[in-house]
Length: 176
Image 1 (cartoon, rainbow, N blue to C red):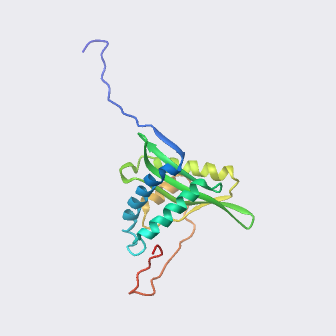
Image 2 (image 1 turned 60 degrees about the vertical axis):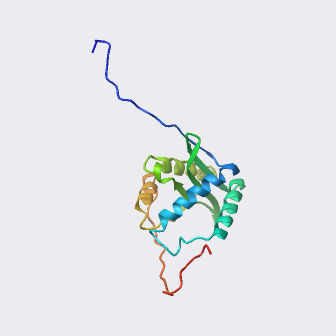
Image 3 (image 1 turned 90 degrees about the vertical axis):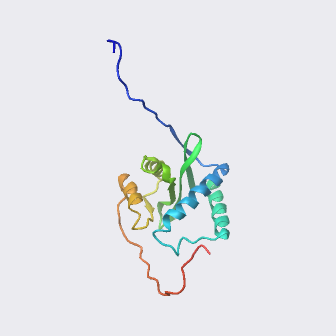
């Protein structure tokens, strides 16, 4: 090697775009939803048995959320492909505004790269702009990777929502 030569390591940086969701994103969001449902089946097989009728209802509610002034739906893109999304909304309880995160999904191929964390931060900005006092999310206790992401941005465990199956023969399927 000559004096002007040097060794370098190749580096490839993917630029992530986080933007407000559009109705054209609904199919990409739906694919993320299906992937998420398969992931969550390991936590609760009864709960995550979902009918086609439910998927249609969910898509319609997501489309309404995209258009709603009290809801905020963001997508994360890499190479013009949706790889994550977050859906949040505000509600008022006894004169206090609360920012609720309805859903956060990052495709399994892109988890652990900070996409979820960035989506959460943008959602928290939305809540702060709307003068929310707190933000809340429900997460399965067994879903440790997701809990860790929320803790990294400042969420803390505050209370547990518990269930007891009373009828052992009937499956609990709230999503018909």
